[in-house]
Image 1 (cartoon, rainbow, N blue to C red):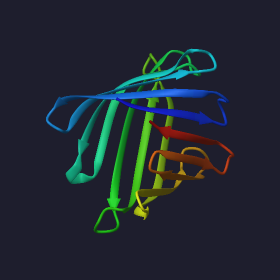
Image 2: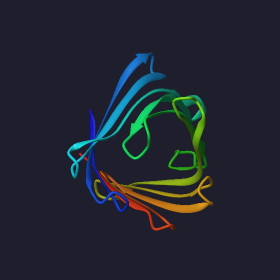
Image 3: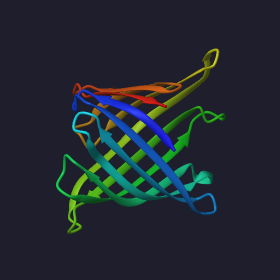
Image 4: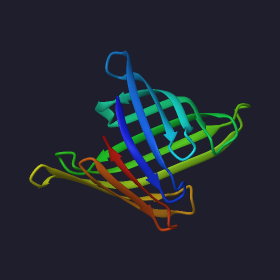
Amino acid sequence: MQTSLRYGGDSKSLRIHAKEKFLLSDNKFHLQVHGELDTKTGGPSFFAAIIRSFYPELSASTGIGIQYDKHHDGPKYCLRGKKAFPISSNGLLSFNIKGRVEYDREFKKKNARAAAELTWGILNFQQDQDIQLKLGYDVSDNVVPYLKLRENNWSLTADLNGRWNIRFDL
């Protein structure tokens, strides 16, 4: 199980996030279940179950599932996809496009998001320290640029609208 501690400027509370993947068939399909516990309220703030498929030969993934977020009314259904276009031969520099669409219980479209990002991985930036830098544009949110800096277990994400979050993988 993968666990992390998450804190964001919008929530003002620490969240404990857990994720588990269950293999469904070969190495291309798995069920991903994840959820969050909000330490301020003591209750769950997010839960999702998604069937994900991976296509390594295409550097792509897709997913379909259901999720519950305490900030929205009831459960939502979601479709998501991601495609990477390697720029360097070692795969450490790539251009990614990703998107997701959410539907309510009546299958009416509620939200759509899309982003394009440039990802650069730097192995052994310092001894035993890997860094990943992402520069992206969220094209569904008035084309807001964002930055994500990841160092081994820590990551910081921020955008030009002032939103930010910090994550520590346990």
